[in-house]
Length: 199
Image 1 (cartoon, rainbow, N blue to C red):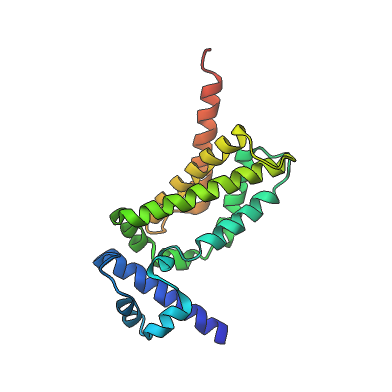
Image 2 (image 1 turned 90 degrees about the vertical axis):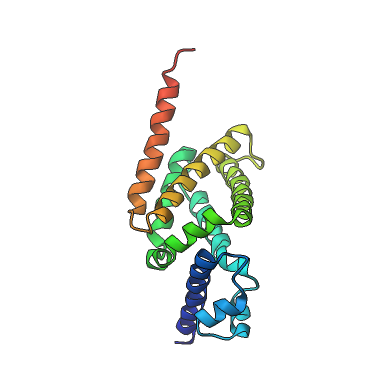
């Protein structure tokens, strides 16, 4: 019961913060505003989050580590694209979609309106891109990624970002599994077309 209560408080703070950020603006929203909206004290906020920015990116590191684990555990005979797509499907299967849907529109408006947060998000994406390139290398028995590993990580993460953007923009109404199949299908079709180009 105690753990469930903590999860409820954290979710309330997260939801209240994103709603306020989207309506008032990130810079204009204070921690006191968030605490009041969630019906908790300022000190309670800091028991769950060290800063406003940490609310926006809550769960990003854990999700990245989870995804990297899925990727490492895929069969070694799978191509990078196949392994990446299968890992996305596995992560979508375990995701708390109801929680994400509750803040989908607010998060989308926030990321569109605040350039500082968009830049921070890009920094985090580049860091995970580098880690996924290393994972691709390790799957083939190498310690360091080569150019092919890096390109695979860049392309796969770009497709993943398209999937996320469409899902958030829809307010969480789109089927994530179908989105994953569609977007990676487009990637494969593009690669097939490239293979048939002259020269």
